Image (cartoon, one colour):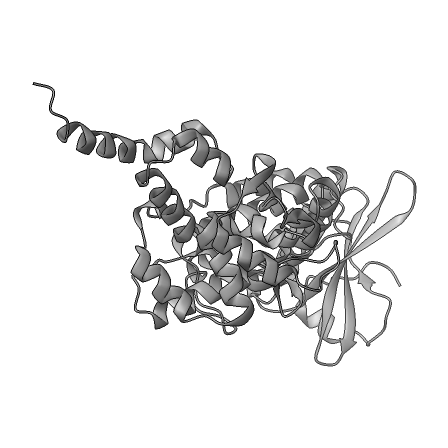
Length: 379
């Protein structure tokens, strides 16, 4: 059979169902749109391209509908050919979720387990089960990303909604996955504009929220078991959540009262207060050297688990909204400095630069110095 006017609905309606598509006239050099009749009720559009190697390549364009009529299928076929010529690998990674999974695999290889786990947990909660996850990469728009971003603040699947700062970190992770898809030619480079224009939410300063001793005790009083131990470790060390989750039994030395943490500034040996030594001794009991020291039901803690634990305990204790695990780090740094510890010592303990400590906490030293000056009798 020769070429058929599949652009006409009346012609398509008379065609017999068959697996082989009915092909119309070429819409461009070596490019055809075909119609596959499924049954008497409808069919699908197929694109066919003859490559330079003389082999045909096929691409499903979707089910015929008032939205996806012949003209829309023709435009989709032309876009597919453009992507093929640009080297886009449309059959390897098709959806946003596919791109995120590919990115996680790359993080595992290039950055290690901690980076991969953090990205995977974010995507599990916010992408894989969300409508945006099933969206084809080539069809995602700025509006899709903004709608997804805005919905991050809403509770989902038993989890509380994200705070603005967490929303921004999750948006950054998604953008990184989509940029990775562009770099690997899973989607055309001109799609980058769709997510690059999406702006982060305005987030408050995490260092503004301080918990005094009574509030910290109230928070811990609402916790039990593994959650109590993990969050108490954060309060006693000022360490980041990821650093605590990555401690193995071998990293804790009860003899010297130190623990080795590995964070943004690299590994560091941290001296522990007596309460922290006792806590870590309990956690280390009967564990092998390679085992995680602080666990949740025998498994490694992740960001979502500790965020939920802190959020629920803070609510139960009647603490201000916005309390997160970082609040305990900020409280530790504040208490250490106001107690007279030098900025350099604090920076070494919490694994950050002296410049960063001075920038955000230098005023505490000035306040303390001002009080001591006021007590001096110089004349």
